[in-house]
Image 1: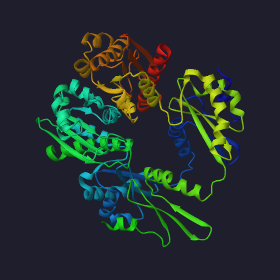
Image 2: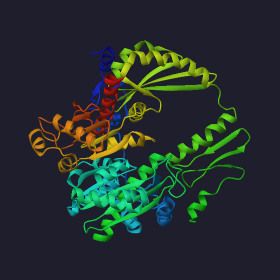
Image 3: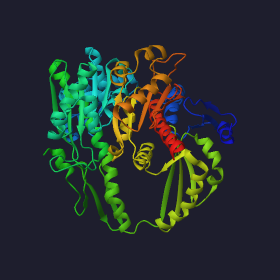
Image 4: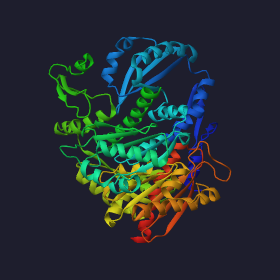
Length: 309
Length: 309
């Protein structure tokens, strides 16, 4: 054991240890003098979060140091701008308890409904009718709430329907698969796919026709559709979802600028579709890739609900 | 245009606009009374960051409101614990200008060297000899500095050597490919690969032998090696890199617990290797997947340098 590990093991006399499940530095709870309580946590953010949730929250509650409850529920939206959503739910933004507040980041829009009450149960009772009205107004633009993500919502939809999904990714390079498999239990509906970043992979593993690549280009309706259709049939899944686009910063032309993305979708009845998006070049590579992934998931979500539910 | 967009376009009399390249709400610079300057930014974090970098920084500098410079350079490490590194560079942690401070998060360790000086140039002069000494001490554990990532470092190494890479991913579901293609210019060395999340994809697209899957299991030295070797030869790349493991929270057994990960590596001379890691079940699914991806990149980095450089 190194001296710095020994130092991490030292605690003030009379302090209690908060165990660190995910690292080496423990936290402490310490009352150096009456009516003063000190709690310390490790500096590594992920370790701190875990320790806070697992030990500090229950400690503070047990001590009775939490009076009343502020409980929030966050509705999540994709495919609608913050200003357009705020317009639609304008009347709700002036409520006082619960309050409704809009948030936006990287294409996702959220409405946080927060209620203040004596207990969590009564806060939830205040929130519930507001949530129902907001969902009614938003329709399909609302994809979930709280810990839901587009990937978990799509996953649940497929699981409920007993369907499976495979992907073929160009400019996102595996990010769609990574987001899908970020959900525990995704093996119940996600089989895998192909990262066809280079055109040689599109030809070799997806059988995209060289003449289509040269005639229409890799970033085109035609290739997006082929990618989705071939990965679906090759892996024998209900759905195939593909992304091909120009994430930049280079590689754009006047005809096909940075931010141009095609999403391909092949469905259970054997038909395939593609959708064009122009995300522009201002947001940068990471953002374009993330928009592409989320939009692909949202595209699949809407298509399944609109056509099959 | 919706009323809420109109509201975003209102600014105080006499204020200057900070243009918003990535969203709709502009920022302002405003001197309501002498010697008081107000700057506002949009609430969307990514828009704020971009606007700050592009307009606020140069404005503050031009006004001469920045006295002296604090310049930092951050060395980045993988494969060494924070406490072990701190031990090795103990003497440097008490310096006063520049200062050297260790940071750690999710397996990555950093040393930030910060100098205070009249100009950026003289701050850099203070930092440079310290950086050289730290790099000397750390050896291969230091993979880069500042904006370098394991993916960019590996990419530069491959680019310098004129070599190419393909991947085969199971538990990371595309995250390794996503990290590699997060680097602009990665098309110069990264071709793509296979997301073989389900065993059927391992058989169908990677030709992993069914008898190996049933005898050794998908999470094994044997399958990791086959995945790397087959994706390499199938896509005709210099290197093949694979990941197969148990990310949890379920799916673990006594013999193969959550956190058990194999990384496979197939090289230009046709040989393939695999490496076993046990990341434990305490850190959770996201963390295990991220550790797997970074460790795979680091494994390739070290192998290339140790065997070929």
